[in-house]
Image (cartoon, rainbow, N blue to C red; front, side, top):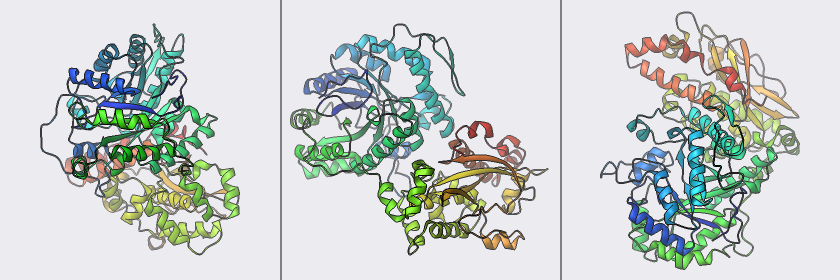
Length: 610
């Protein structure tokens, strides 16, 4: 479809979109399991004008339901999907070996990985592998990399499965290592996860300055890593509207670091199955029912073209399509003959502008004072993040309801502060939902109880939803009596000598040209009952300190909850719940000084913004 100069990272260079075909995913029905069929499909795709062929980096396959559940992308309100019956796995060719073979059996298709699991190979070795394949293929490699999610696969193959925060941090370092290996005469790098000293790559890749680096994943932290270190981002199963929102956010993130947004491509993966039969369309939806409806493009060829045009109107010009039973159906020929020829001019006349981020529209809620303050505080304090999901319907509706009828930011913030502070404080009840992975601000509001983590995140999310810049701050507290903790948690956390609270969370908001620190952790009735009432009333200008104990150390302020701290709180929650079920676990957890000390403050504070 295009003749993109992939040596210069950026958007596709031709008139039409870049169209790739995924030959193997870990989902049954979306994978070609033997090489003769893979070669035939790849060569057919090449003859139809596809731009690229892509393979996943997995060793096990799953049913569609199990895939969506394990990958964490289900739309099911309960977050789960029924386990499907069938074989534990079906044939799946190893990614790099198969791509190397395809490089000799194709001539023009670009060869991509969607995506490699970072934990499976050292990045310096991976850079050498990719450089070699780039040389063999004549400069056709696209390298996609992700943090990894398939815990069952890690465990089956004896590969350590670190915390989410560590996996994502290691991904960021890997991208830097590979760029160094590809572009420096004497590559050196020293990080928390990887170190290289003279990892020379000879021969170098054919593509200059290096093969395109893609990051796979929908998380905001992962996408922000791509903004700094990659050439593109791929998201799975998203609607055009959701892609438009993320495109706008990526553009803003690029501008914040003086990067030209056009140098960062946004790609989407969808199922593509053109058929005019309503019965077959229904069968496809039932077969892949756990993949979000937005991730399935089906209908007549003309209808499929129109759906693709919606993505193009949203700013998407790079597509990775996965076709059901591609080796045994006629879908590929229909796509090649009836869809691809119509995509060169797929941009509809005067398409709707879908690239406006919802937060920009929501700014109409705010006063002129807030608009001026936002320019000073920075747009990053208004954006939704992984933990501060201020665009979630629960958060948006709650912010609208509690701020209705007021006209100034000071009044809005006051209502938000008191709403959050009035949520019952219950650390044990909070640990019960936190241990299940419910870590976002919307989870806090839906559960209706919180401790400091949830109070801070929900305060910041509600403020942002109301158009008020806000961020999360942390302090280490001296609270030897820990009277606000439930007895079960207090005996574990306090230990024999009393431990500090190393990562107490609270919210900060930007009003009238300054940051105000507002602690809303303990609900007012509980604070008064335990003899520590709030000494400062909210006025929109004065900081409200915690009532839990003296501050030992300020741990910085952050646009999002640092993953290291969030992961630590989840671990604490799970350890506490385990301790309540077993005497041996209780003794172990109570004596674990390393656990209760939290993540290293200096390491985390490198991410601080204030």
